[in-house]
Image (tube, rainbow, N blue to C red; front, side, top):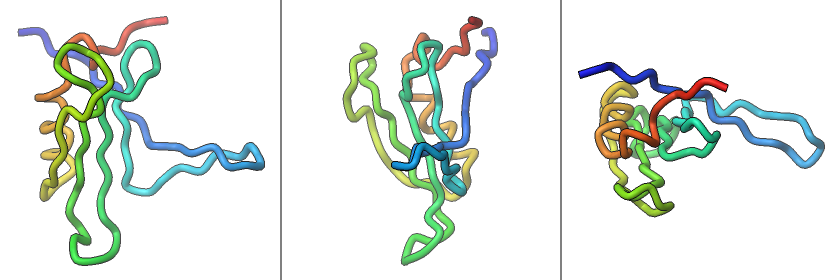
Length: 96
């Protein structure tokens, strides 16, 4: 089995003034077309502080859909949960 390069990036938000803010402890998986099939982030406050939440934003057939959500103890476990549910073609890093 060939290992696929994952394209996890820090989640960024564009503000109204045009500046960009990088969210702490927040990562988005980008596909080859720049779409986001998955996202993870760590709760910083509240009763779940320290846990990681994961979201798969694509169905097994590749259409936008809630493909699953959950929590994990570590960021690695959250990434692995997402990668196990995102269709293989939607998690590859494609050149260009």
